Image (cartoon, chains in turn green, yellow):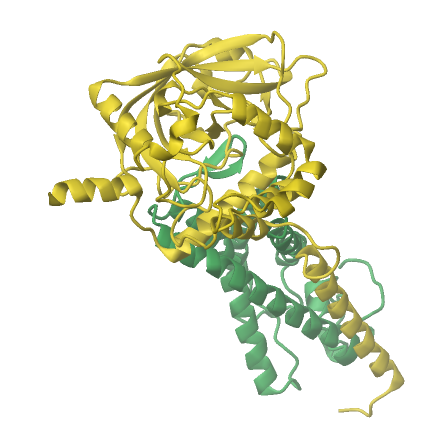
Length: 199
Length: 359
């Protein structure tokens, strides 16, 4: 769905940046904890599960909100191919936000582990106890995480290209938003990188 | 496209720098760059080196085992130290595994090595407590680097069946704690049954009571069956599966029982080194009775596809400052994932049973 406003819904922007913090933390915690048999392993694992479930909860709120409020249209002068890539990459980002926590949850279930989110909060298993299934999901969890990081870097680079090079308002649609001005004068705004108060 | 400007070039440079910075930070977090870290794979690799080859589908340590089931009856006494539900009065189902140390799943039982008991204790409120214990109150090493060095140094020479003295001598000189452990194992009674051994927590744990007071605790399961030792001079003469067949025969006649004793650390007790025993009198609480009333080969029992990770603990029990706990958790997980990928294979006890059926 296309959105009349040039910006994403403010709630969507808030969730986006909250998830940026959580997903980055998660990826770094994830590769960090598998890299060590030191005491950090236990502490990082204790962080990994609640953050994962928080990401799942947030994307469960975010996707309906995104579908209901839509996205502002991309600039008219953007080549069709780039628009398609942008659309496809966002579909993949959303898919992965759902898939990673679910694979983690399913992997613990298949491994016969208690899905202990915090000390006092344990989730029920979502898959049967099956080591073959565990092995596949455990591999998938790593491979998808690395691809996810690469996808996020591409997403970030593309966003910065919009913000710093094209200066076409796309970057601002997910950050501070556009100034409320009559529609006729806001077509080409070249002050993308100037600091302005929140709309 | 407008002509390429200096401003645009610097914008590209900024974007490139941000991406590179993130890739670099990620590579550092993952341990791909920077100082070398010891991970779970290093531990399993050291265990495989000691065994001589990876035993596909089996635990990389304590690969020879048998499943059991039973129950734990909490008597309420442990609630003085921890809010864990297992300590409340009541009977809770238990599954577990007896095992012998070493990476060869078909090794003989006549070896002066760890006799071990692992447990999974679940309470109706969803709490789960996993325990992995040995029959010695102390462990040979206190940290993961020493554990890896121990596995490498004690690899049996194929010719002599004993570790290479040229490797062992300097290793023991650098690790007096291993030397002390070996002296202990030489003297200590080697139980002639899984049922009459005391099983120790190995590490210390942090227990928190209902009032919020935290104490450091080690525990031990003390058997009702009187301890009788094996003749250590004639271990080689034992049938391959003597201890396993003994526990099968014994359990067919009746259950075996242990009393869970919780020992509270005295001021000055070492809590972060499993190599150091706690000596002298300690405040000790009898928390309940473990009853094992059935054993099963790994092929049909519930223990094989489980990871007895000692850091899976209920509320009221947490890991202590002992670095070995994280190392055990990581190494067990690494071994678990490897054998999950490889697929499972038959156990020594399972093979014996199959042969018997074929007769």
